[in-house]
Length: 105
Image: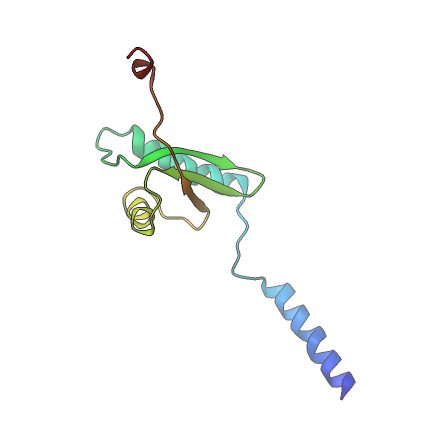
């Protein structure tokens, strides 16, 4: 019985190793592609989205970090539908950034 259990565990481990898991690890090119799509969207003249605070590639954690002013699930879905949808995006709470003109006030 112990041998059968051991063989089943070994075969299961081999199967998982060969097929992998659903957790896909992004390459640098894939991360940059997602981040560039975000940048291109906001550089276009028809970008209608006012909830973005920042975005960048986090190479260490292999994610594209997107800061939203309102980081609710609804706003995350709106971003995914309006801008880009990717499993590599990690949403975080962002803050309103000040521009140069705001310092003069």
